[in-house]
Image (tube, rainbow, N blue to C red; front, side, top):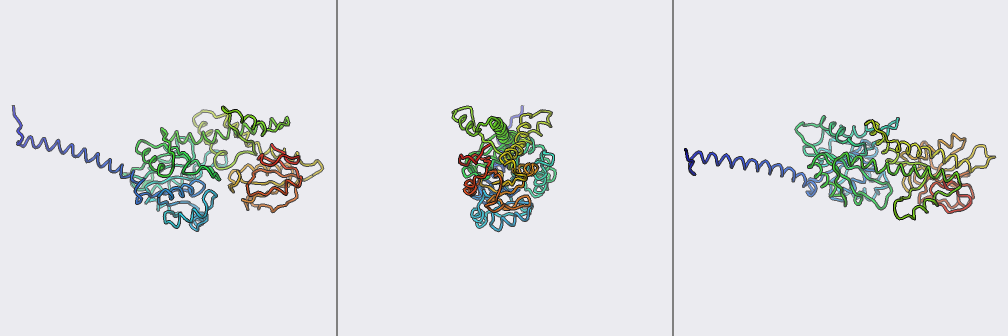
Length: 455
């Protein structure tokens, strides 16, 4: 039996090996922790708080302003050179960001817009805030999202946190965005972190903003999740962790599908009440007295904007791909799309039978009050339906100067019937109301009198 003494070479060798192994393990662990903590310091170290936002529209520009106010240096990237020039001149293209707010961000040297994707190489966080519209067949069009991923991927540095805020069907981050980025990244040894945090922007909302609207975050793995939570916690007051990107993506679709279905319900209910001469708005008011189990929705000429007419069809498409069905959503979409025809019929019914070519004046063409956003506005289909029924149609909107090749008509304009489609606070309707011309009020905001009719 050989004894190893304290001073023997064998003991020293064994001790050194053990110490080396422990020291190496500790060093690796410390290096890993250091990289992790160092990256998390992106959220607190002003020198590394650089955010690149792809898309500077209704989602990306408000996010940029909120991030600047939270101490981030923000680079806004957009493919539109015209929009970039407008932004850098200090003029905001959207209502939710004032010129003053934009100028303050620019003058602080913490915000700049560009078309150059290579500038994203400085960013520790990159977010996609690009449109996800429908194509000609009313199916998901992820072309803008693909383009954004492919355009920025070659310039991303190791350890970058990549977040998708663009609304899409569950699996878009994991199955589309990540493979695209991983395929074209400039160095195959680079590792990126990924998360989904769908936007919750409500254009024109004076109460809910980027800061106080709760944000859902779902990351690919624990470290991506922690980084994404840290990022949004630096900007938002409430950040909600969900189990995966798919949960976050599905939640966004559910939020807007809930609204689509309930709007369709009240639009259909309005037609039933109208057939019996019942004021549907009085019915909604009465039902709203119930303190539980009811949420009021208002009838209108349909749905418009960047979310409600679009997002539910990402859900129906996703269901179809899985061999499942989302019949109630498809039916709700159909009901809402039929409303302009119903409104056109109601309006024409208010015109005297002796009028051969009725003149119809539509007030408000944007999809909601107090914004100039005409994306997917149902007013377009209303105009088309009225023209089909033989009417001459003119529109007035104090916020929308040009649209569909035409311009807002000056008031007064002699008409046989007026349709209040969207009631902006800047709209002066006094002379119209006093004229006793029949008015179809689709907003239920005008006073009750004999020449005013509601849907």
